[in-house]
Length: 442
Ligand SMILES: Cc1ncc(COP(=O)(O)O)c(C=O)c1O
Image (cartoon, rainbow, N blue to C red; front, side):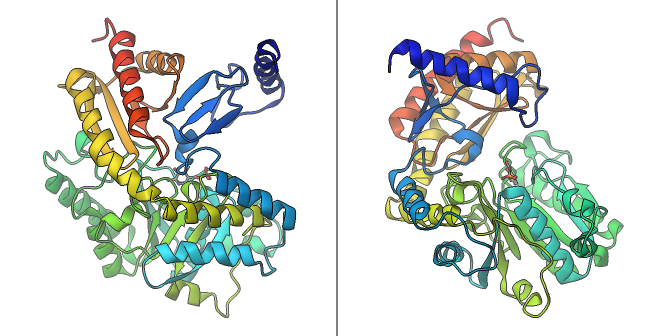
């Protein structure tokens, strides 16, 4: 293929996109996405061969890296055998995938309900919690993202709507975030204690016996990689136990290797009742998510119909990709690598970067799950304005680094397989761009 033709493909992709594709979370008039045509490991390319270091892992999902050969091969082999199957049937790939997932969960979790992604995993976990407890309310934090669905089943006309008319009953509270504490806290211990006291008051004010579940991202991701302070998650568990409330931990972004552990909650003294997952379980090679269900909740539906389902629940291509992805992560030590590179290379490099740039208010994270919090003034912690963040983002892309930018933050979230050399290259780019793009700022 000549360069002209490949340049032409990028232009064609942009033109078709502009004319016909309606994008998520965007005003449609000014599309700004990059053309990505191929990938390998922690790198992607456009049609013309321009290379980018993918320090976004797309949407923080490509944990195993792009185009892992054994996962691609497993999808190919499954496609030749059977590309689709009804959810009510029995299928070997589905059982193999579920077995591998529960093997990573704590004891007392034996069943998996498969969904198409993370949002419907949370929808179904909430449905299970409400039907199991007979209560309606669900408490979750202001700083969280759990997915983009909700009205579909309430719009449905047939019997499937009736057990699911739960459009009410969502209550929010503040979780811990020491850098921008809602509780005037100055230490992690204080933040933990005061955030728990706040939650205790919210539970009392809402009426404990009306609350089915507390839904938390173990480490809130898009909201800023807010690593919980010591004692917080176990304190939430205690409150749940005291009041018969279920704890749902959303591991959609944090799970399957991102923190350097199979589940983020493995690093804390906490055991949930339901676990939701998606993204890292198969690195997004085929859309999939699901709920890992503890035995007592699963037993609720032994003789009672579970009023939930999806045409593609347990889709064979997704199942084959989960089996191959989890096997490769295990045999290649990919989760250990994420932990190691996080603690020995990424963490120290980001701390050094923070020393050099006054605009970095805080860096926090673990594994391959880090946030750089950018501020206009380190004393007041006023967030860096959107225009400056926009300049940084463009400059990073221009330098060949695909960033994950959210509000006033850059999230450093490469695939778990990222190498020390790639991290070093990325740090040079972050350093240069922070220096040049913020000239005259503050
Ligand atoms: C923590 C968390 N939960 C749920 C979701 C929703 O997942 P999906 O986009 O697959 O529906 C996301 C997506 O980013 C997420 O980060």
